[in-house]
Amino acid sequence: MPFDIDIALTRGTARIEARFAVPGGLTALFGTSGAGKTSVLGAIAGLITPERGSIRVNDEVLFDHSARIDLKPERRACGYVFQDSRLFPHRTVRDNLLYGWRRAPTQRRWMALEEACEFLGIGHLLARMPRTLSGGEMQRVAIGRALLSGPRFLLMDEPLSSLDEDRRGGIMHVIERIRDELELPILYVSHDHREVDRLADHIVQMGPEGCTVRPGPAQGRKAGPDLTPSDAPLALRARLRSVHPTPTSA
Amino acid sequence: MSTILSALPGLSGEEWQVVALSLKVSTVAIVLDLPLAFALAWLLARGRFPGKVLLDAIVHLPLVLPPVVTGWMLLLGFGSQGPFGKILNDLFGLTLIFRWTGAALAAAIMALPLMVRAIRLSLDGVDRRLENAARTLGAGAWGTFATITLPLALPGVMAAIVLGFARSIGEFGATITFASNIPGETQTLPLAIYTALQIPGSESQVTRLALISVALSLAALVISEVLTRRSGQGKAGHAI
Image (cartoon, rainbow over all chains, first blue to last red; front, side):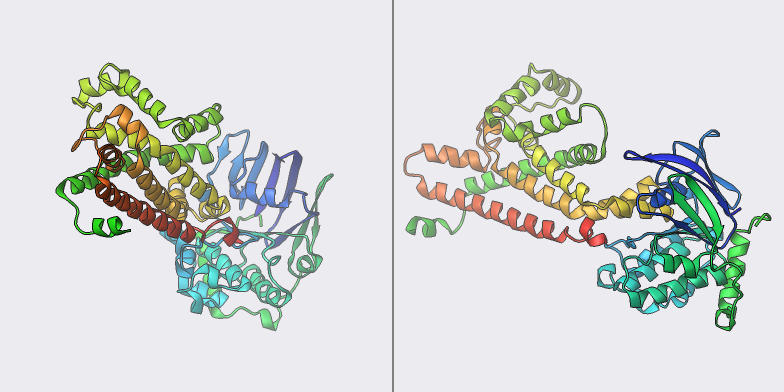
């Protein structure tokens, strides 16, 4: 299972429990604000330490309280796209994009800078500073930065929420391509029905009574003519598979 | 007005000596202070430990104590019979009292709280969420510090250096108490002005020294202001 989560943690006075296992594709973590969706992403990324339980991604144990396993964030190979892009303001777009790439072991780099620029349409922004970018451009660069770090899965925390309606479509299309062409497992936090309807293979509903998993509207979709991957993404996907093989159970 | 104008051209050898000594004392004081101030600022900004409030208060003590009291405490601690003074003398043969090194120590102690405050403010201003982002991108704790935290806090650190330097140049009370007022050894700019004020008919000398003092302080403040403004980028508000 790409995501096999069973954790409990406390944020402030709120007790958050999350327990779900989902196969690949894009899984939407859905729930009211304050349900702890972002905290779950933080725990998977290793930024928050749960009080008990375990976190497995692609059959690798990232955290196991009883076995005292707690991989550091930098060892988890997770691509985290934040709600607020979090580009480094003192570095150019190019240096932002290459920040994780430079730190990834050579054999884990399944994407090159030129490929990320082409995939996201950000080649013309490389020399710019983040503060000169529009919201949509920032989020594209943030996604590129996460992909270039050679991740085996993506965590996305409401990546569309800071964008206006016009820009959302473009970013949503990028996310669909990551899901379909690269087949990178994505855990996607959202409270917006329309996003979830369009994107999710599975929906994890987080609530006070625990998590329920149900199939999402996007499941069973067939790649239409407009979704047929060209050769470039196929090569990319093959490289991704050789770096991070899909577990046999998926 | 005429005294001011006539005072402007050329400084005497004695006056240059005073200025050079002041610059030397202040430079050594800041070099001593910087690592200590950064470590303290880090502890106060990021640390969670019992007694943090007390440490904060102790660091700020020289800012609120009468400087003569700080000087007296330095005499107790670093005088020839003081515990630290003895250790320094026995181990390194270093005497602080009545020496320019003592003036540097006094200046360092007086500048420390200002520097800690400036660095702490700049560390508080660094968006922790950017550090988290760096961690998920594969940077370790030290790598994150070196590539994200330090560069974003750097303008504040520079401002701290300038502020501390200006404070050191102006240091009077603790210096005259601990290191005394010895021409050529511990007589820094403010002490020289004080001495000149005691001598009738030395108004032009006082004016010249005072003008140098004003110029140095003004330059420091302008530089510090520019650096602080530049540090505005990369702070919490801009990350959104």
